Structure formats: C-alpha cells, structure tokens
Length: 345
Image 1 (cartoon, rainbow, N blue to C red):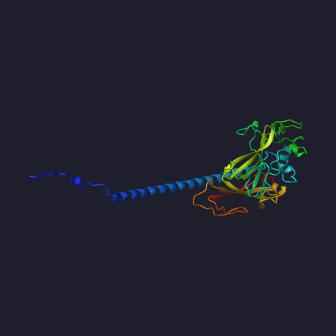
Image 2 (spheres, helix red, strand yellow):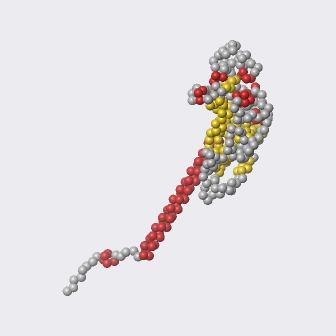
Image 3 (cartoon, helix red, strand yellow):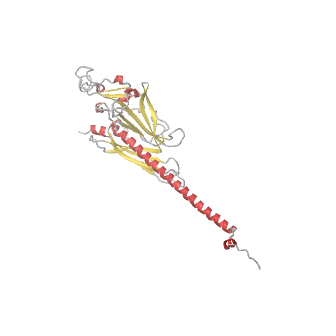
C-alpha cells in the first residue's frame, strides 16, 4: 500500500517571474517614471514662467505708478506761483548744485533728454542705457517739514518756503525773490504767514517744505555688472550742509523709457501738441501733460523662447532683440495739474 503525501495545489503551481516578465515590468515602471518626471519638469517650468510674468507685470506697473505719482506733483511749490519768475534763456543743468541754479530752474517743472547718447547724458548719472530718455521732475514735498509723517529738518534739505505775508518785504515786494525762500538749511527760511504786519520779520513762520529734483533714467545694470536693466533715480539732497545727488535703484527689469510731452500752445492748460523733445525753455515751461512708455523685460531668459517682436514706444520703434527674454510695454498719460491749473482763467 502506497501512501501519497498531499501538497496544497497552490504550492504545486507557484513559480517566479520569468526574465521576460521582469524586463517588461521594469520597462513599464521606467516609462511611468519618465512620464511623471516630464510632467513634473513641465509643471515646474510653467510655474516658473508664470512667476516671471507676474514679476514683470508687477515691476512694470510699479514703475508707471511711481513716475506717475511724482509727475502729478511736478511744479508744486506750496502756495508759491512760479509764473512771476522769468523763463531761463537756456536749459538749466539738472545736475547743478548751487542755490542760484535751483532758483533759476524753478519755472521748468519738467525737463528731459531724448534718446541719450554719449554727449548729452547729465553729468550726475552714469551707466545710462543708450537710446533711452531721461526725465527731470522738480517740486517740493506736499508735507510740511516736521509735521505728521513728514521727516524732520535734521533729515536734510534743501528747503523751500512760500510767503503768505502781504507786506513790503515779502509778497508786496517788487522782487520775486522776496516771495519765497530756497536754502540749504532751515536757517534761511525767513518768510511768514498771513498774520504778519507791515513790520519786517513779523508774523508766524510760513510752512517749510523739502525741495526735490528727481532725474529718472534707465541704467544698464542694477548692481555693477549684473546685466539687469534697471530704472533708477538721481535725488537731490544735502549732506553735511552741501548739495549732492544720490542715485537710487527703483525697479529692476525696465529696459527702455520713452516720453512724449504735451505742450500747451493756447494758454488754456490743455496740451495742443505732443513731442519727444520740446527743446526750448518756453516749451518746457508750457508742458502740461506727459505720455510715459516703458519696456519691461524678464529677469531671466525663457527656455525655448525667442523674442522676434518689435515694440512701439511712442514715436520710437524698438527692434526685435532676438534673445530669449520676454518683454511687455507699459504706458500712461499723466496730466500735470499744477502748471496746467495756473493757466486757467
């Protein structure tokens, strides 16, 4: 009699993977992994492009907002009306650092240089991107020194004071220089409010404001050698009682700045003609509006993209760069209420 040892059926049929099955499994796994890797890379790249586009839009809008806000204050000198000052015979040097030069430039609330080259760059700025415009804006701050959120006098000047006093030594004087004060320190602020009498030096001191000259330009680099075009601004100020210009980087990625100026030829505060170069001091004085055109560029190139587009910035056409940076044009029209309002009947 034979005794047969019983084994479970699963034991009798179980066996390992064949080499072919193993290779197929590995291949399928690699294909899935490759697909997931490609999807991850594409999503990461797309997210990077979205972030770059958002940053470009944010920078462009901020640059326009910054310049627009400054231009709307152009020609603001408190209660002082600069129409009593003669138009300068020649265009003033925006980099001049004397009180006399600042006074002479008061009637020109804006000034500019069209398509800068090597010969017409203002002396207080450098690394200016060739073919771009330079904009000069002059005004006082709207806040009074030491009041509210306004900086104290110790932060530096120069300082401006408009007289409100009708006596022979100030507003009733035939010399327009007696109608206001412009000095490096507050010690030169000697004008008074309406509570003065006919006696010289009487009354409460008039409000004192900081006088500002801002020079906007596009530099080739934000920091030396970084290759990132940047909107910068030279700012007038005082250091240890002496006038000086300080260059401040404002917005990275701004590659081009072009400006058209609206000139009022009818003395009604409305621009009658626009041009990129008003040229004469009289035309600059009659500028009552500004058209801004800015070309913004991404900070880093985009893989697989070539910029073959040209860009229209006012009358200027910027040719296709043929590189791998994405660009966008931002523009705005800014009315200048201070000079325009003085022309209204």
